[in-house]
Structures are given as C-alpha cells and as structure tokens.
Length: 451
Image (cartoon, rainbow, N blue to C red):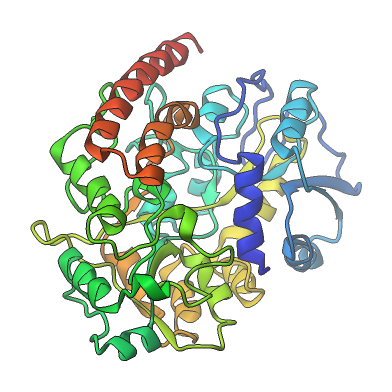
C-alpha cells in the first residue's frame, strides 16, 4: 500500500476528524517574540521542542527528514518526536488535560472548531502578521478550514482567527480506463461532459453478464463532502446550520443520480458485487470518483492505460464542484516553546517546506498552486493537471468542519446507506435522513451554547 492509501485507511479506522471531547482550556498566554509564561528556557540553554502526530506507512521517516532539515538551522533545539500509530487523539486529550501538551502537532480540520472553542489551540494571527506570512498564496478553501470566528458554528468565517495552517489541498478526481472506452468505441471524457454524458458512456461500456461496468457508484460520503451535491445547487444544511436541506429537490437530485447509476441505469455494480480489490484497478469498472491521493496507487497499474478528466458538469447549472480538504499543523496553547514552535510550523507550511514534502511524495498536492503545479505536471496520468484545474476553478471547503459534525452524520447516514445498499427508495431515505439531521442539529446547538 502506498503512503496516501495507508493514511486514509488509518484515518477511517481511528475516526480522525470526529469532534473530540471538550478538554480543559489552556491558560498560558503567548506573544510573538516572547515566550509562554511558564516553561521558557534560559538564554543559551538547549531547548526541547515536542512534535506530535499519528503515524502511518512511510510518514514518520518523511517527517523526520523534514524536521532534520529545520534542525540544521536551529542546532540549539532538540526536537522530540512523538509518533503514535493508534489512539492518537485520546493520548493528546490526556496530555492537554494533564498540562503537558506537545508544542506542534498534526492538525485535524474536523476537530479545529471544538479545540479552538475549548482554548486548546494557540491563535496564530500575531505570528502571521509579524512575519507577513503569505496566506493569499494558499488556496482559499484550504485556509478557510483553519479560520474560526468566535460564536460561529462552522470554520471559515471572515474575520476569524487562524488556529492552524494547511499543508495540502486534496480533492476528488474522475479517473477512467482508456482500454475499456476503446473496446466499447466510446470517446474519452471532454471538458464539456455532463452528468448525462457520463451515464451514456457507462451504458455503452457496461456488460453486466461479463461483470464489466461503466462506473463505480460514488460513495455517499464523497457526496456529503460537497461534490456533485453543490454542483446541483444542493446543500447538506441551511447557511445558519439550523435546518437540514437533505430533503430539498436539489439535494435529492444529486443523491438519486448516484443511486440511479446502480438501480435505474444499471451501469454500476451494487456495493456487494464489487471485487474485493479496488474495482477500478482490477478493471471491473471503467470510471471512478475518489480522492486525488489514489493517483499514487493507480500509477502502479500495468494492465491498462488510464487517465483523469475534469468532473462532468451538471446538465442545468453547468457546475462541476469538487471539495477541497486540507490536513495541516497547529500549535497548542500551553506550548513551552511557542516561538520555536512557530518557527518549525512555518517551515512545514511555507513554499520551500511544501516543495520538500512534495519531493518526498508525502504532501499530494500542496495548498500552494505553484508547488502543486510541479506535482500535477508529473505522469502518469497524462491529464493529471486537470485535477488541479478543477480545484483552482471550482472547489469548495469540505463540508464537515461544523460543530459536532461526525456525531450528526453518524446518526443520519445509515438511512441513506441502506438505500444505496439494497435499492430501496432513495427519496424516502433522504426524507428520513433529513428528519434525523434536524434532530441532531438541535442537540448540537444546545451543546455548543453550553460550552
């Protein structure tokens, strides 16, 4: 398994992104150029900086390589790396509650709001201003995930403080098997393709009796992030996060279009009929929508030629929105060496640091368009730049950064997933999910107001 796939598997298994328990607020105050009120090292003494992260295949070695490069410029600092393969967030909660947090840690945009509201994270705005850090060079959707305005139910609000910085900007891609298209005499996807064109191509390719399919059903999890849903002018919730919009015609259209791939157009295998290996890599399906990190895995394909294309446009709105989600870094409020923590963090997120990560094939791709271009100009596939084009032209902040999202989502998603699994009425499922969603939003607002 490649680094990226292993990481995604790790995140799913550990529930990374789920809102953590409310932790004790950190009280030490910090200003750029100074030090926290406790734990500062005397001038000239060796300082210890604690870097903390969960870990997965290949990642720890890459991080140590980058940190060592920073250490060459700061020989007076000893970096203690804490890499945990499991129960990472539980360990962090224990450290923070005990008053012994790390200095710099890997960030989780799904937890940022809860952590920031609880006083666990150090606001970075003063550091950003003093160093004139170029936030404007980063992709806006990536930056938004780490900005929170006090009192807001979601991250991204203008005027909020920065509680972390992104290190990548990962999207979803449409990959296709050129050999399967050629065998069926179907033209490859174009920039003008619509949802209808995708279905028509899938119908021409599909030979169900031979277990050959035009398309893999898109995970409802991907739609929930915003992909295809936003293209149809649908939404998971109202702008004020008080009302579910899963039962609106636009939202139902997006989820039903995906459901139709299996049960109406019959160009996608049912979830239970998919091969045990990746259906696209095994040559079972001609098209798949999944994370950009799969490019590293698809590059190992030897049995057929493949490429990627821009998302198909919605037939009426003309949109082809993709979500952008950005892992990153943050500093803990009670860090004993906040200035040094900022120095390391800045090294990890500036353009030079991102180039180094890209060379190690860890950050794929960067949240800097210039750095990302270098990665996207590699091959395979030939049209890799199309994915970057989709991000830059029409991407939206991934839609699971609002308060207590994962508790809410875990409550309503079974209704939708059942319909995808057994073919029962998707519209009825969306109505049921919306009712549960509304109940959970009410609970979440009550919890939010009590923090």
